[in-house]
Length: 90
Length: 157
Image 1 (spheres, chains in turn yellow, blue):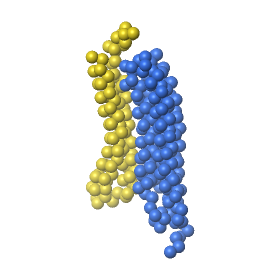
Image 2 (cartoon, one colour; image 1 turned 135 degrees about the horizontal axis):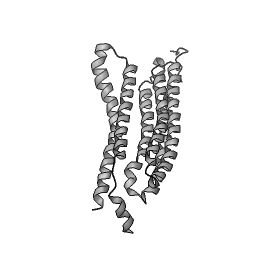
Image 3 (cartoon, helix red, strand yellow; image 1 turned 30 degrees about the vertical axis):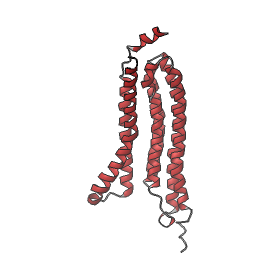
Image 4 (cartoon, chains in turn red, green; image 1 turned 180 degrees about the horizontal axis):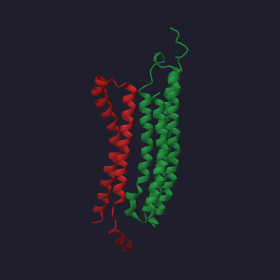
């Protein structure tokens, strides 16, 4: 019974940690390799430095978006029902 | 076979040192921030385990500092070539970019660690401190972001 909330907290934290760690890396390489190098290089002649910088900025923006999601989730977490129980146990 | 004066053999040394110092110092700051706020979380969770989710935030923010350094290190490392195509000027610029994000990340990681430790312990006793702790952490995090901005600006030169 006491394990279920702990596991759900672990699942939430794990999900957001993976999101924060992997999403920017994906965003960087996806935006660089696919969008800029494959599609735009032929069209508008984006230079290598410009595509690197833009991809890095996109990655950082995505990173902060994920961090904002996590803070919002942590902030709006209720966590009320367990407080009373812990006082009584020992 | 002599290299021109602008492309000395030691030119890439500066660029490589820039890439290395970007990730080394950022990781130093992030590790300090994680360890310092980790001790706070461990001490706090003994009495208030339901607050773990909220108190993980300083650890996540310290991890983000290391991602800043990683981004700049990857950018620089992708642009270091052999001396013939790599003027000394490029090396200096890359060294400056790496040092900018590295030391900013070190400072921000120290700030996040100290604020996270005290903030997490305080939040256990007064939950309304949480908003203040988040704000202070964001301001500490932004210091690392400034370093990243300067580093990317230098890199794009």
